[in-house]
Amino acid sequence: MINNILKGIQAYTGTFALISKLKLWKYFAIPILISIATATIIGLSAYGFSDNMGRFIAKVWVWDWGKETFTTISTFIGGIMIVAIGLILYKHIIMALSAPFMSPVSEKIETHLTGIDKHNHRTTSFQEQLWRGIRINVRNLGKELLITLPILLLNFIPLIGNIASTVILFLVQAYYAGFGNMDYTLERHFKYRESIQFVRKYRGVAIGNGIVFMLFLFIPVIGVIIVLPLSVTAATLKTVELLKNENLLNKDLSNIEKWKA
Image (cartoon, rainbow, N blue to C red; front, side, top):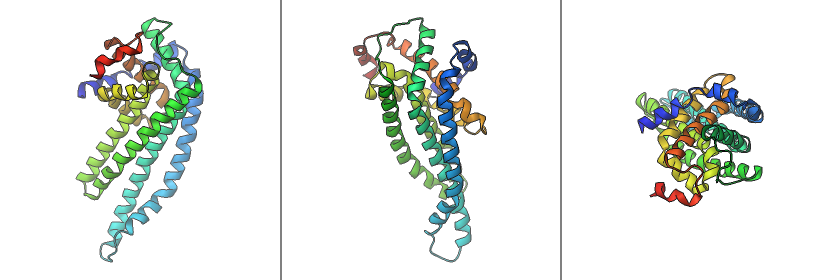
């Protein structure tokens, strides 16, 4: 697992140069606009709702003693909840809506890496790619929210709970970010459920890719601009390598059974 996480992170090396070499920047124009617009809307909403969330949580404490302290803690927890949920929504919205634009980028990188212009992979339309992106990300959004809400309760444990909650939440978000980035390549080779199985097998790679994805989001302004170009390129590089190692490139789709066992 640790080794695969490191491989997912290392895949970012040289992504800037590869994007420039293949002249891919133009394909990222619309996804970057989607990213900026989504980040702005969610950021403003998070700022406005954090105090309200804190006051809502504080109502649980019905006693007068310690009320002020609990309210302060609740406001802090409310802020963390809003930020966590905001990041989750941002991630899945941009990855779902960007799917039709990222798939061609992934395909061009795959062609460059393999030297094969005509693959025996699935051919999908703009609408099918968009629907696939929405379907994958709605599924991941639901699962991530179910995992996230119980983890947030750890914040009520002083110090240790706060640290543990932050680390676990970060890794969960990283996994689903990497999942979405890898699927831009897997979409051409696998059907929906087969893609899910493949990512589960290489969850460490997904986490590694997602760790850098999440770290980009902490860079003001520039982070939401470069996060998709670099993370999608890195994910494609690593996913194509994994497919090649599994002898699944330029193969008939019936040959996927060997890694599903």
